[in-house]
Length: 450
Image (cartoon, rainbow, N blue to C red; front, side, top):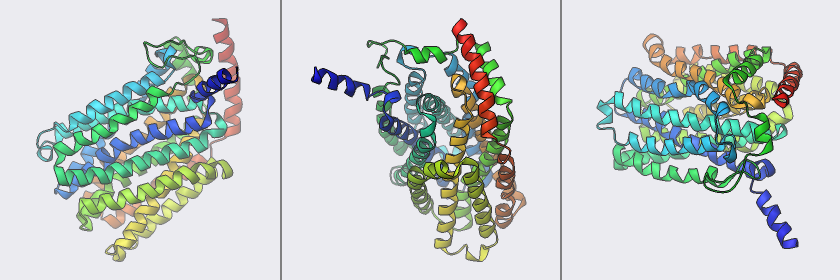
């Protein structure tokens, strides 16, 4: 009897809803899997293009195009809230599908012939990598909101976003080294083989007890999943509308958009600025950026969520954004120090660290404002707004560089974090939760009568 009981406890602990350690491990690895393709497409390839004398406008256009699918996540999320293979979980089947698409599309980008002189094809291939990356991102976020308790969400976001930045860091340095050593067409498919192992995580761990591991295995939908699953588009969009018109939802949407714009500008200008203005090589940039993102990821994993838990989302966001404004002013006013690599390294490290901590705090804030029944759609709407701002910011770099000097650009982009600080002060968690509780009660009563 003791042996049987021990086996049952062991099996119980293999479900995400039952095991906090497994939740942290699962979502950390899934976010590592998201960061890996981004390290290549958003950082290694732009640095490689800059090294091969492509113009800021061409590089910015490439980054803007591959950023578009991340803005379209809001079209994907309602599909996931409405349709799923419920006996395998609400979101896990979609995570597996997105990971498969990532593997295939990443193999495809290596087939682009003469990518330096065929940027249109490179953009299209990068677009599909981003599409499936966004697909997996939506499913992962929706799963996290549903299975991670509210008191674990800040810490989980720290681990998730930290893991993602580590994934970006490792693949940036590895991808740059392989592209320089083997050539683009060989290096990219080689990396995709490594990415394939990430799919084992969503395959092995189920969301809740009783669910199927794979379509052909035994299992059935959990009672909880059936309770929160909506069966019509009308219910999904009606529920979403009621939540997103709440004041705090509107304010966080505006704040996230401006912060996304800042991220897009900084991410796109860094390889152009360091390689074409300061004379770095793409290898030098990748080594510096991968080192700083690795450090930021580690700090984010172990301190980002803890700081938010202890001091609160709004307070920490305000502090991080103020520090961002300060560091941008310093770099803009210190052009005489740009020749010192240690000074530029310090700027990249601090700005990357702040960017990671800001993202963790924004993720935790957005999750706190979500209603689980339409969680994937609501959270994705926030992230789609952020990525729209990021895509716009990326595309803006080429135009800014044609009009302003680098010093002026650094000064101008402080406007974005300044606006963000002002907007987040209007977010009120208590009022939002009270209104959401009333809404939850109303929806629950309707579901029970169906």
